[in-house]
Image 1 (cartoon, rainbow, N blue to C red):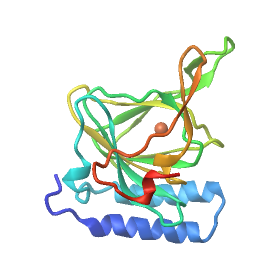
Image 2 (image 1 turned 135 degrees about the horizontal axis):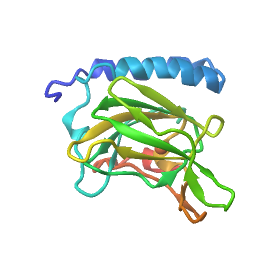
Image 3 (image 1 turned 180 degrees about the horizontal axis):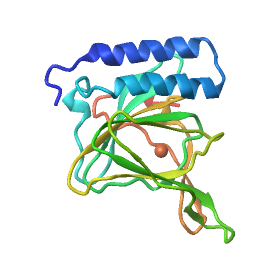
Image 4 (image 1 turned 120 degrees about the vertical axis):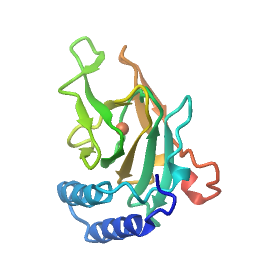
Amino acid sequence: MATNPNLPRLRHFVEQMAALLERHPQEPEILSHGAALLGELVAHDDWLPDAYAQPHPQYYQQFLLHADSLARFSVVSFVWGPGQATPIHDHTVWGLIGMLRGAERAQPYAKNGAGHWAPSGETVTLRPGQVEAVSPRIGDIHRVSNAFADQTSISIHVYGANIGAVQRHVYLEDGTVKNFVSGYTNPTLPNIWNLA
Ligand code: FE
């Protein structure tokens, strides 16, 4: 897909995100301006190196592409194998999801009257070039899946923290909440970004 990856695209995005956050904007501006920047990045599928586009037969993959030196944001390639899905989960910080390849479905969840986690609102299907946002302010709990049962899909995620080290939560349908820290898939990441 990207044998000679156009890395300047990713670099431009990282520079623009850092410049945006340098101005200390409120979250609505981060999400609206950041969504426009991420939309530009995922408008072209020619920059993601193949090493960060590999699915695993069993697990969805989360490859760290960039961690901001002040942990103001991180950029991850989220690689779905056919039919793979997340549990119901939250993020605890703002997040932007831009579809690069294939498609994914996101279903928001909320607690119902019986205290169980249940689908709430419409399923959103993201297609290449499209971007959606999450945050504790606008809705942070969802379940996401590859829209395809027979092909890999890839989305690019940007979060307002070093997301691999953030303490967050998985929600079971019976109402149970479990703590989790996602980490990163990268096989060679002998660096500080594995730590909180
Ligand atoms: Fe998510």
